[in-house]
Length: 295
Image (tube, rainbow, N blue to C red):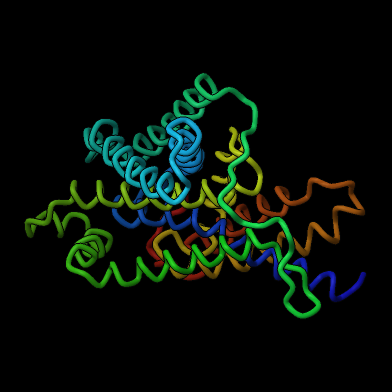
């Protein structure tokens, strides 16, 4: 097999992996404040894309206005979910909160199926379909744009966690009970993490929706997102970025080799194997704290 072809697969895979990191960052943000993996992150990603479509197609707004409004709307939704569904479960066993996020995922997917139907809808955000030439390599422009957004948001979060509000979230992540005992509003911190996670979900939904259309399949990005989060470390934003690059490249190259031999469909198999092996061999991930429990 041509080495240049594999290199091209790997580079495009790494770029798409950074887009997986957008989903993973949302999972990490909530885990850092509540120690619970959010199984509704895929559904939030899908909802974010539908909200953008509602503002753009339904209200007739230009995309530059529809996307920020959708982000604000989704932040409000995240705050509402935390306040109505999750805050009352504070102090309960983590498995109950985990099941609540699973229930939210099922509920949100059912709502969009009833309202929006199952037909994929195109989402045009102004990214050309023409490839981007980098020397002999052909790069997907949408992947390049998505990777840039992921790195930009990562930089924003790095700066945010140096602010006063960010330090509060870091304190909650380090010791939930100690933060409570010194007067830090843990509830507000968790609510903020849900709002930020929903904002990131909207960005992921818009970018992936522009590539594959907006439908129920966007919620399946949860598998890629949770795999990246577990591989990088459930409490590490930097780990989510690096793991996304690695998983994306590994997935693309392996599918390029295995698909012709097995007839296709190996991408999900590779991702699932990475998730299973990571939990078995290194449950805290590559960059996570060693006190993280097995999921």
